[in-house]
Each structure stands twice: as structure tokens, then as C-alpha cells.
Amino acid sequence: MENKDLYYEVAEHLYGSSKASNPLLKTNGEPLQKSLFETEYEAGVNKFEKQVALYLGAQTSVDWWWKMLSRRDYGIQGWLKDTIYPDFLFAWNHNEPVNKKWLIVAEPKAIT
Image (cartoon, rainbow, N blue to C red; front, top):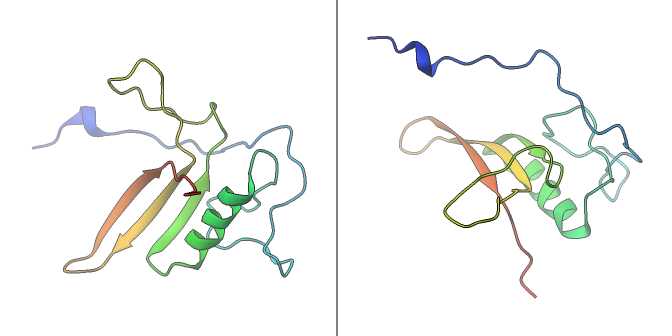
């Protein structure tokens, strides 16, 4: 039985920030791996978020990742008064015990 309410459309074109600055690169000057977009930019990315992006790009189980713009791209309204704006969305390919694909929203925090 088909449920037409479950269908959705994906935009043909996605546009980044008009305030794009220098490209976000690895320490050796190469572009980050597995970014959803061709180029990620330094604008709005702190040192810890760059480490998370490098980590996600190096994982074999991650198909792609997206560093969302703070308070712009996506927010989750939970039971608290304020909206939560996660930093990353990534596609995780879990092969054990069966092949599953997950979309994961993450708000990583550095432990100090």
C-alpha cells in the first residue's frame, strides 16, 4: 500500500553561503574527503568542527557529510524552549548484520 504523504522532492540545486571564504583543506593542502558539496569553506567552522569533518571524511562507513551553517540550515524543535541547531548531517552505511543506511544529525562537543 502506497502512502503519498511519504514522498518528497530533493532540490536540484543547493547553494552555500554568499560569504564563502577560503576553502577548508587538510593540513597537507588537499580538500576534505566525502563532503556533500564540492568545496567546504573555512567561514563559520572552528578548529574542533574541522577535526570532526576530517574524522568523518576518513571513515569508510561514512558515505558523505555536511557541515551545516550555524542557525541557518537546519534546526530541531524539541521539548525545550530553544531550537537546537546541529553542526553536521552525515550518511552512515552500516553493513552489520545487514546493509542499512542512516542519516545522522550530530552536534559534537569538545571535552575539555
